[in-house]
Structure formats: structure tokens, C-alpha cells
Length: 102
Image (spheres, rainbow, N blue to C red):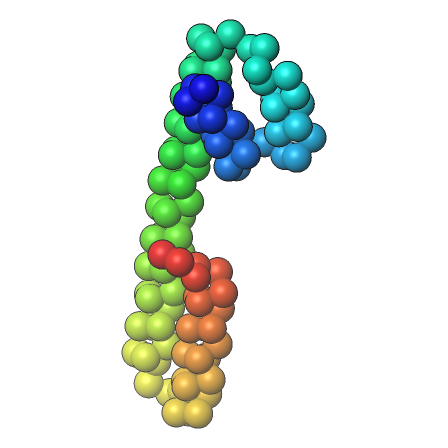
């Protein structure tokens, strides 16, 4: 029974599948061979782990780009203080929207 539960959890939480695909993969799950369930569970979990790692890497790169932008704005000498603060505030807000959970 644990194999079926693990499979269901992997299907329901997978970023790879849409709702139609989830429903199709869960239909008749009790009749699937255990080997199939184990392999599919492993594939879905590995995909999601790689997707999370890739997502984290992109968020880090994006964060670094925003940090460079903030440093660049800070280094521009002929920028009015109010304009500088406005640009920095906008950049920080956009960074928080794009990468809320780094």
C-alpha cells in the first residue's frame, strides 16, 4: 500500500503533469504493477528535484543581476538622490516579486 501512496503523492505533487495527466495517471492505480509504480514514482520525484534545483539556480542568477544593478545605480555620480532612490526602490520591489523565496 505504501508504494501506491508514494506514487499518488508523486503524481499529485509533480510539476511535470497537468491536471488531465494527473487524473489519467491515477485512474486505476490499484491495478498497476508495483514495478511500474516504483519506476514512475522515481521518475517524477527526480524530475521535480531537478526542476527545483534549476529554479533555485535561476533565482540566484536573477538575484545577482539585481544586486549588480543596485551597485551600478549607487555608483552613478550624476544621478539625483531622489531619482536614485526611486530606481533602487523599483528594483528591490521587482526583485521581491520575481524571486520571493530564494
